[in-house]
Length: 266
Image (cartoon, rainbow, N blue to C red):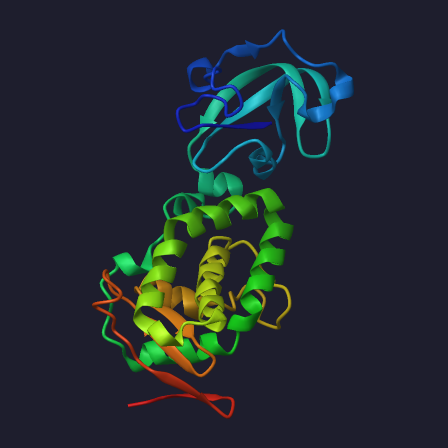
């Protein structure tokens, strides 16, 4: 069984039980609810699947392997006990969860990376992204939520969104000015979704579009993101945005959609 705690080892709910200080020991509570209260009543909670622990936890966190004692109640996702023995702390949370926890905790911010000089390589990535970006939101949301539980997906999305969305949105808005419209925010948000999906490499098949099994179909946006570029599309023009002060140090290459084809404008 697994238990997630705050990074300092204290439980999320009460903040009074330190699992790290009790490794090798038994933690016991006397103030617990009757079985009729179900798995969410008072007691000590743990889950067989570590991703189910996020029902009562957050990112960042610490993880412990525990043995439940005197089970009170439970369901498919978690059990409630009168006592647990703390066996050990698990340090490699990426392997434990099966997704890139360490990066979800500290997401890459594309506008904190020096913007590269735009080359044909970046244009090719943008062309590939243009062909799939409208599917990214639904594909990532459904595929991730189905794979690792909706609660995990929510936490990872919120972690990335809180870290980058406001500044990326503001920087892009400053640079495109009059071109700002809903399609711009949709396209920029698409890159955020693409980046979130890349944090789940164990997903082999992504919903709603055909692709080679094991291939991440939204990788072009991620490759741009990791070199410091975020695309936006206003319904007619694609732009690549980058730079620490995006409104002042934008490196922009205009790409025009024409009769279903994308090509570079000199």
